[in-house]
Length: 155
Image 1 (cartoon, rainbow, N blue to C red):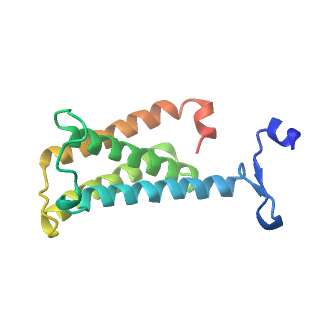
Image 2 (spheres, helix red, strand yellow; image 1 turned 180 degrees about the vertical axis):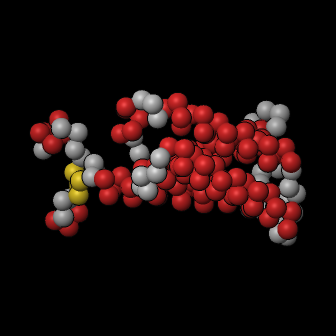
């Protein structure tokens, strides 16, 4: 066990099956889980009824919801670009374009659905601008981090 930990291999043995957390398949599975979990968080957060939102703001920060939108779509953009880059082995610019496009569609869809669905929430152009800012920042961050070797080993 000590040798496995020194090599950076974490193993788990459920029901007698040896499970290597550093294998490529497991890393791809973890990336998919992160991506779809983050997407579920965005859908839940943006499309939950207004009655489910707290009446008293959690933080006394002006336009805190715009900061949340920025962070949510920054994360989704990074995860999608990484997903296409790692799993489908796309070139960087193809992964960026596809990740940008899908994230932009999700941003537009959430704002339109907020207006259409009977959840007592209105779409806001400033929310969309915050979403777009997060998406654009995710591209810049990915291009910057992708130039470093250690980033390519992360999931």
